[in-house]
Image (cartoon, rainbow, N blue to C red; front, side, top):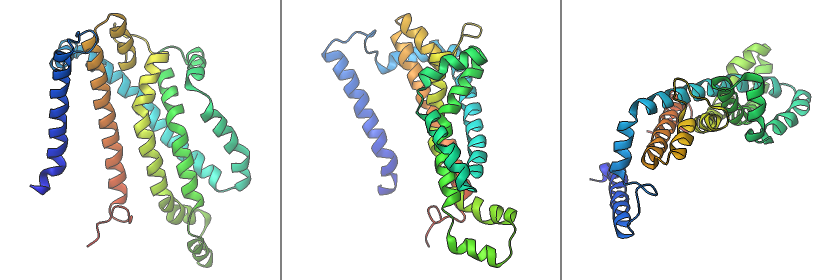
Length: 260
């Protein structure tokens, strides 16, 4: 029984919450356009399934492309910053300034430069995901054990050997932590991009765009269904990133190696 508690407790809590949902709705006579019942949300999701599937596909495309760009550029820039204190002192403040600039201000600029739609959504997602990767990975590169560095010097290791066999493996847990944070933010960034720079393709936009559409039409059950689909997309993204973290570290890093 104890072995199944991690699964049974969330299921039981979910059932209680749904029962409370129905109870409060009936007790206070809440109209469906204010708070739809769970079955109404599922019915709306099925009725709007084609639009929602297209919407989640567009949002996922923006999230994946922006996330991958942030991971690749962030890793490369972190390596560039970590191997020269002068370079870090020169460039890091401007990276911070860029990170502190609100996306809602940058979005019109991206639309002006890249146009409405996917390119701007990818750029917004990139901006939201970029800094966690840079900050964590840079910290990983500069936090390598000094004793190991001296050992590599004693062994006459080349610079490329030090990077390949010492700094990159040493920075990997930090890098993957940044990737996990970016993976959590990527769907949020793509949905934000839909709100600020999205457009409808064949009458259907991303999740954020469809949210605006359903809200303007007072289709509240479909609006809740859109939120449910957005949550599912976020869970899939986080699951994929967590699996990558486990896959790359579980055989050698102390945080994931099982103690016998």
